[in-house]
Length: 426
Ligand SMILES: *[C@@H]1O[C@H](CO)[C@@H](O)[C@H](O)[C@H]1NC(C)=O
Ligand SMILES: *[C@@H]1O[C@H](CO)[C@@H](O)[C@H](O)[C@H]1NC(C)=O
Ligand SMILES: *[C@@H]1O[C@H](CO)[C@@H](O)[C@H](O)[C@H]1NC(C)=O
Ligand SMILES: *[C@@H]1O[C@H](CO)[C@@H](O)[C@H](O)[C@H]1NC(C)=O
Ligand SMILES: *[C@@H]1O[C@H](CO)[C@@H](O)[C@H](O)[C@H]1NC(C)=O
Ligand SMILES: *[C@@H]1O[C@H](CO)[C@@H](O)[C@H](O)[C@H]1NC(C)=O
Ligand SMILES: *[C@@H]1O[C@H](CO)[C@@H](O)[C@H](O)[C@H]1NC(C)=O
Ligand SMILES: *[C@@H]1O[C@H](CO)[C@@H](O)[C@H](O)[C@H]1NC(C)=O
Ligand SMILES: *[C@@H]1O[C@H](CO)[C@@H](O)[C@H](O)[C@H]1NC(C)=O
Ligand SMILES: *[C@@H]1O[C@H](CO)[C@@H](O)[C@H](O)[C@H]1NC(C)=O
Ligand SMILES: *[C@@H]1O[C@H](CO)[C@@H](O)[C@H](O)[C@H]1NC(C)=O
Image 1: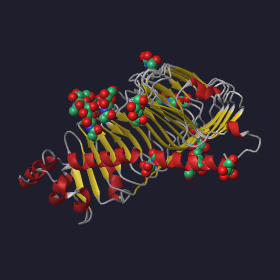
Image 2: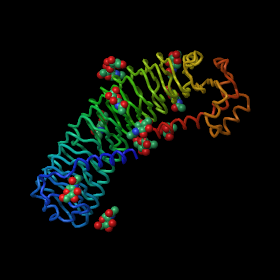
Image 3: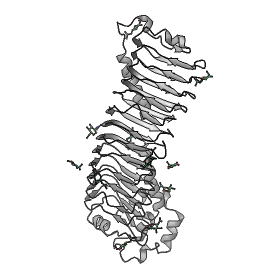
Image 4: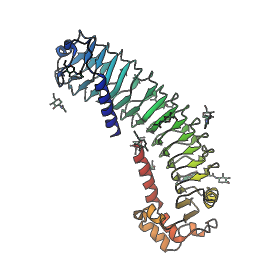
């Protein structure tokens, strides 16, 4: 939705810019609603250096098509649903003021825009036969590439800034190296090749970043993210975010099965939730040693033996810390909690052997969600023995069994947190 409205706004802006250029002869003006269905329809523009209007190419008679000589298109170039189109070339085209869109071209195997330097929006959707795409692009606002067979993309290497960059479901796409320095809206890379390696080493800041399903991700110069930053369901083994100092929204590292190390040693503040969850091999969560403030909840789940948050001073939300390792101590967190640093009304710290749950106000039950009180948890509470926690000598004196029952339905409530975070990232 965000994407559509951005495109719409961009389209309006581009239309305004494409006001009649007095130097353009009327033969170089495309009447609105016209479509090109044969090469002859395109050849009529071969005398035009500048073409005004939206050029739409479609139909099932074209097998090969090209737009010759046109250097600037004041409008959009849309190639859509041309079922027999094998290849398309527009190698003189330097500038498209609005959108370059290739959509639903099932046998298109080659497209070249060798001179293209400037475009507002690139939209490539459902191009199952295309494997490479090359441009010389220096300026673009929105890049959206989805459901293509692209394996390599050498089209965006000279771009330094965009509003939005989204590549998803391009199953053959492996390595992507980008020189982007800023992304003012969102950067998303998801469901592409399973062993994809993405490198955004020049990126300094972005509004939102979501990276899914990659084998490695490099963001060596990333200093800040205005809203959310998420690494979800990747096969990344180490994540180095050593330049990162702040995240304005939530920070999530979730379901990365092979992750063993995160270095975010310069990260001091997270404006939303801090979620490091379900990373099965992440044993030592020790790369967050400067993290001082968390504006949302603190969620750490998995099988970790260490959670070093030694600079942590303030968590505005609650805390849900749950590890299956028996070797983890809740002492540091309990001490923070008792100092009032964890301000939310629910606090759960659980390990394989012991657990502590504290409810500070009577409203916390409702915030953890009544639906999360499963039969299992009420069974545990009515037995008067909340699994291993009740016989643990380390259980805090503040622990109340009633509260424990509410908060000991973590499966539901933690999933709830995941779902909320995942939704925020979409
Ligand atoms: C552009 O020219 C056409 C006719 O040549 C005219 O109908 C239209 O209103 C003009 N648009 C602008 C924005 O001047
Ligand atoms: C795509 O093209 C085919 C054949 O030309 C036509 O039957 C179909 O309606 C078109 N689909 C769309 C969505 O335009
Ligand atoms: C990504 O990097 C890994 C490790 O260097 C390598 O094994 C894999 O082949 C790379 N993926 C691609 C698509 O090149
Ligand atoms: C995002 O953060 C960058 C770097 O701190 C800043 O320059 C930019 O203005 C911010 N953008 C928004 C929309 O707040
Ligand atoms: C997680 O990644 C695997 C591939 O590594 C993929 O098959 C699966 O659909 C992904 N799951 C989610 C929830 O994205
Ligand atoms: C992360 O990168 C920085 C800068 O290159 C380096 O100093 C640091 O050792 C790296 N961290 C890890 C855990 O490799
Ligand atoms: C850490 O962050 C501070 C700003 O908070 C910055 O001045 C410093 O250069 C950063 N260090 C690294 C290694 O990126
Ligand atoms: C945790 O990871 C497992 C295995 O990859 C997966 O089946 C499960 O759905 C994940 N849970 C959440 C909440 O992401
Ligand atoms: C947790 O990790 C230990 C080894 O560090 C392993 O023995 C144990 O099976 C793991 N537990 C779970 C639930 O994955
Ligand atoms: C558990 O903790 C003890 C003492 O802190 C340590 O010696 C041992 O190696 C730890 N075991 C694991 C599996 O981390
Ligand atoms: C950016 O993140 C915020 C907060 O998570 C979310 O509300 C927003 O929809 C995201 N925007 C985009 C374009 O992904």
